[in-house]
Length: 231
Length: 298
Image (cartoon, chains in turn yellow, blue):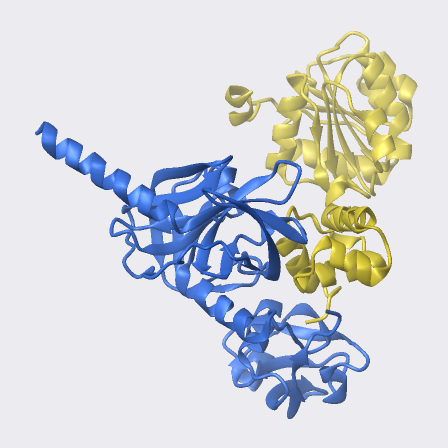
């Protein structure tokens, strides 16, 4: 959606009261409510309110009650819901918003593993890492409104990037990379280690995956750079 | 006009036929075919990465299929040196100095029982450079992208029919020319020793960034340095008393800023005789000597 994402939504800012139920009936003092801020604690809500204000969104806040959110969402399905906190705390709000098919920007702290992530993704959900820059928040809000999914890679705990940087080579993989780097053929490496050529290839492939490389030469250099292999 | 065109085409064909005499086809089994260059009557060269850890290859000439033994594989330069009696005379004139960006060059090799060749262009020529895999090449030669796998390891010839480089596939789909000066360097070492000696110091390293005060104190040009995170027992580094936590500043007078610097510096020092090493340890510069030796395990 290049056209939409380039222009930040020009929305009116409205006052947000601490208690959502007080503001439930739209009065003259709240002309438009474009976003509903649902949060599991006062501190998180304060943070999210700051974010939505900076992003120039009209906001309505709601605290600690998924049912109240459901009530608010029923008549306006097009509303944004901004929710935050840890995934555990935000989950009730997320499922409520999902049922109502509202666009959601979730500003979550902590890390999320891949299993939780697969359970989370649906159209119109943007998941961002704690307190993103206003521009990022804006872009995510627009994208979620357009029915797209947004995922902040910074939230991946055991994601691919983290794995390739941090998983150390096994002693066998290290030896295989070292001997390969010395110019030995697969068979020669196998002979020296008393294993089969296929096992050598297996260890080498595993090392390639961990080091994030595609060739023997790159594997040797990556292992040296990571301090796994002696010069 | 027509005759000029025909003359031009005939000259090109003659050049391709001539170049075809200096190259061979190779396979490492399972139908994987690539090319090689006849360096001298007993020596062939090809790309190292394409061998994929093979032990031996079959060499295909116009008349014959013969086995070849792999003498050495330098992955950082992507050069493999092989031994086989092809009966071909080998190349006489080699230089990469003649190349300039935009030149027409011929990449020649051998496919399935037939000569293979492709006219292509030199896209870029530059000074000596360091490959991502830590090899020092005498000249940067970039050819037009999209090298046929069959031609990998083949010779790149200029319009005078001189071998300039070996064509290899680099990272990011680039086609590179490994300059013949670099090949010559590797081949002469291999022919002298029978293999490619791998210098070995025995330190595991990690990159560190130095703050400005320390850079000034140590009179360093850059903020990058390497710190020793492991000394292998029984290694030259252990014998020289290098310790965990030492910053290696220079080897044989060559400044070391990263692991590749050290790897390359080691390839330039004589094996078996002491060379000076400068380290930063416990707040002070310290000079010592190491005797770099060949990596064992061959």
